[in-house]
Image (tube, rainbow, N blue to C red; front, side):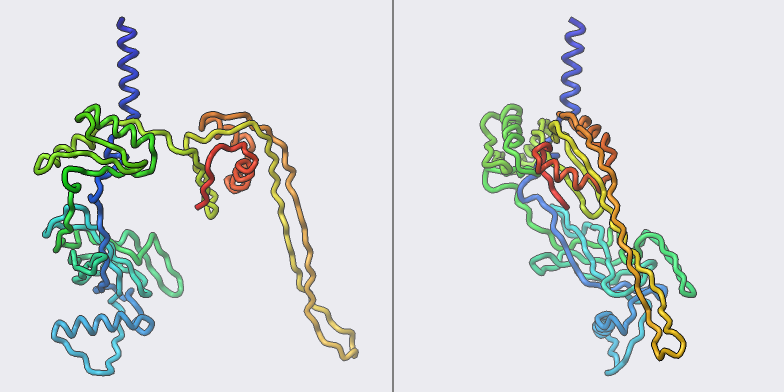
Length: 363
């Protein structure tokens, strides 16, 4: 009896470890971030700002700012500034943000400034997609890098033309966020999956109340919720329900630029044989000078001699056994001794031959 109870407890612990909460696989419709954007100036740089002869918009911005502060520049004045940089300021406004709260901002140089290190971002209005100002940003810019240059030599660590201002923007306007419409709220799955949607509906109906959740499609779930102050507590209960999401579609992600190959656990492999050999073409050009004979009235000519060498590596035929788990597929691919760059071509050929059961996505 004790052994049976221990086995049941082990199964329950294993299920809870692999289960996800609804908040991990879905979000509440309407509860979303909003992107903010602004144009500003960073001042106080140590000679690493924009070269104003090549970035006239920086000078125009300075003149406009000074005029608003009561400083009128004479016509035709050519400003030679080295301590100012024009930047684009971006921020993310979280849902339910209220006026007076602060958010982080990022300042990115749009001119030819060498570094934003040590600069101060001047007051910058941040606008949303509707053109309204939702926050004001200002503060010292933190740059996670350092650089130095002298006599034509330079050393740089990390990126210097982008900086961050922690809590650098103050929210001035709230974005209205509605938790559902009428008596319903809507859950949106992060990825379209009918099985996961069905399991979410079953979990809500079984643990909250019967027949209050209905799946409208593979992504949207409609839930009948109480109105008023009780809706927040109701959503909290739903978010913390445990479910077992369905296994995703078998997929292999290939990054052709870096040679990275990533596959999920649903990838399987049929019996197949693979032979892969690299073809190398080497072209060498030697330049020689042809001198004319004495008193031949000829001219000295440059002669190019080109040699082409083609080499083909010996490709050994390797039989790959059927693999029904990710570890077996990885072992089979490693047995070929192919490099990541070789796997790009091999996986595509295996997919065309029907031996690889997965979607190929090239990024």
